[in-house]
Length: 316
Image (cartoon, rainbow, N blue to C red; front, side, top):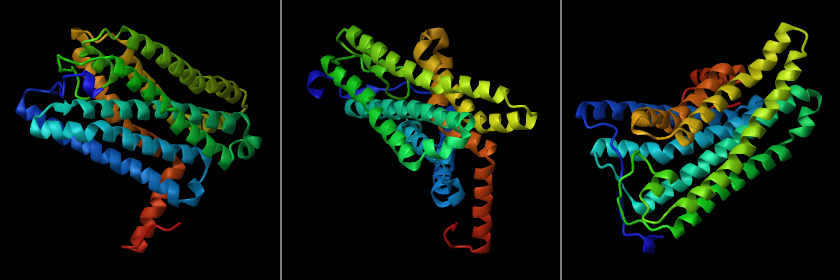
């Protein structure tokens, strides 16, 4: 691809031209990123070390925390560097790599959220057979297929970029590289690439959307048949965190990729992009932590043991 382009540097759009605003944004995004790393790493640590969290639901949650950790690390460090240096540029090869991993981790999260929907469906609609259906072998197979199948999406898109030439302009209207941005700076007609994006993205998105939300149709039907209000509340509480994360994620994707990026909506689009790439990976662990009694109990137990044995590792 590098032989087909004269662009070596891609210029990114600055979030602000005011120095005071830049300093405030740097501090804000630094705190957000540090909190994202800490909160997601804490969930991974609790899921790995606490025996009572060794269940399919928390196994998937641990993978989601790892995804959020890696996804935010694709854009946040680069953004912090640009804010501190006012550099606002990236090499063309780094731009391609950033786009690849954004698409990979984004696709992985879509597939993982649909897998978590299936887990909640089995837990509520087939509780007597839950341990047999969601065995550890089955969970491992599901997660392995999520990580491996998600590779197909960015590989197809990156391979199709080879038919394009990039000779300028080299300016994109965002603070990171995404596939639609590369189309905008191509000197070759990207119509075929757009069609591939629509077809592949449409198929993947439709399958993921249906497999994520269809289980909730059956879940709601099952819950509504529960006779007691306490039973309904308990059943709904096991789904609230996941459903909240799913709605935030799909709402952000819909706005970014399906709402026209006109000049009137440019500022709003950048705000939603920041939420999608930087804030959502922080919200996910907070949502699950606030809603999960098991996670809060595990954290309290870990802190209690640390107070009793300062300087020692957390033990189960």
